[in-house]
Image (tube, rainbow, N blue to C red; front, side, top):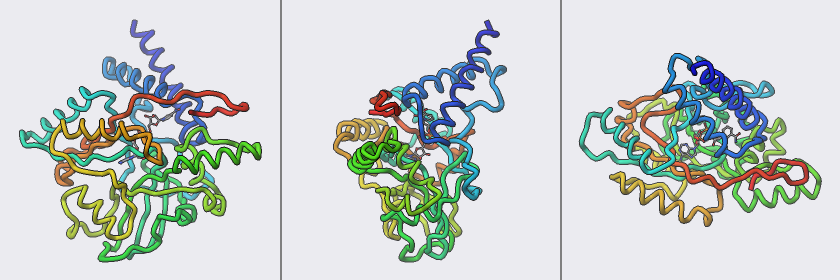
Length: 332
Ligand code: NAD
């Protein structure tokens, strides 16, 4: 019995490692995200049931993919992690209970609710208000230096205004808006060039161009959603939501759908409302993210291997399937 479980776990590890490479390193997935998520969960469940069989190199412990060697490597002083997923309201409630138990509180926890933007995570480092470095998430510990490329994104400020900390690392998502993505692929098809499987891969692929003039021609958009390294935190509010508003004041683009709620019901209402409006947004989202709003409580909760304990992504039901158009995998 354990022999066949072990075999299945090894099989799943190999598959997930392959899919990670296709998705993160080549920007060319061969299976829909829903299939990847199903295999990931199967492996996680087997690892929980058979901890003795879990590999120290398991993909369930890792973030993203290896940074590409063509780029200079950037070490993330504060790791760039992934997010745990909840696929149902019950799983979200279980998360919320775990948070309360860990914090040992019966008090209501305020959550910051945000759309889960389906693009590529980037880190922007500002020194004395000037953009000095842009990096990809990579494997969470080190990413690729894409400074010249992020500088070409029109809504990324090169200079911040106001009383900005000396060192400020802003994290967020780069997306390709839907209309622009369709136009881009249409033109690529006419020129018989590579089409991107979906807007996420288009954003990630566009960011990792060796020639920033190519990135400059891609219609990319940035949304800030958190802070990394900060030289002085004293003047910053304890609330994550308030910090995002502060970023906005300094000139950074922040998504307008973000709001705070004080209950699990409030989180559920937010999820349903955004899901209902998903098709009206001009960028892809694959769920919503709920974050414990208090930074102090976030610090109390801490992290596990690849994700913070204070946040969860509630994913939308899978929409996409892989089809093949003119010999190229294309996701619709
Ligand atoms: P994730 O996309 O599930 O969640 C973490 C990421 O969410 C963050 O790194 C950040 O980039 C992003 N994000 C978007 N909005 C955010 C917000 N408001 N606040 C914070 N973060 C926000 O995790 P991941 O590790 O990037 O990718 C895992 C997922 O990627 C899988 O669940 C799967 O769906 C997909 N994937 C697919 C394949 C495939 O072959 N199809 C392979 C690997 C991964």
